[in-house]
Length: 183
Image (cartoon, rainbow, N blue to C red; front, top):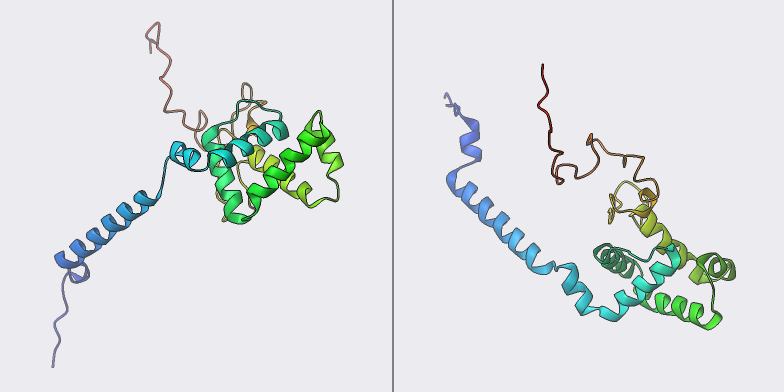
């Protein structure tokens, strides 16, 4: 007995019903995913004290006063997801700074040698400077263009990227042409 093969195998795999069901499932997944996410403002208002303490500690640890609140909120939540006692560690570091009156992060770092809080301090500094808190190929990037390691030489060195004019170059308005070039 001869079997007839379908001349168009794609149509059998993607019927209208299957396409409709997959589309509905995708829309549902997107709706559920966006309902759980919040803006940086919502995150800060829900955990104002923890993020405020983290931002103040970060300013002391990095020596930068104008740190991005959105990046700080993301870093704080990521550290908290890694270690549930992270807010307590931040509070302990801030208490130690206030109690001993360290003038800068170098003095604090020297005093914390051998202390479990030393690793937490270094993780915070690494997070702000590199924009990641984990190592490896699956590490999530929390700051790339605004990572502190690129800020000191930003005016003379292009941030490493495959985009010719740097990350997000298409956002800025292009320079106007005063005189039309002649060819």
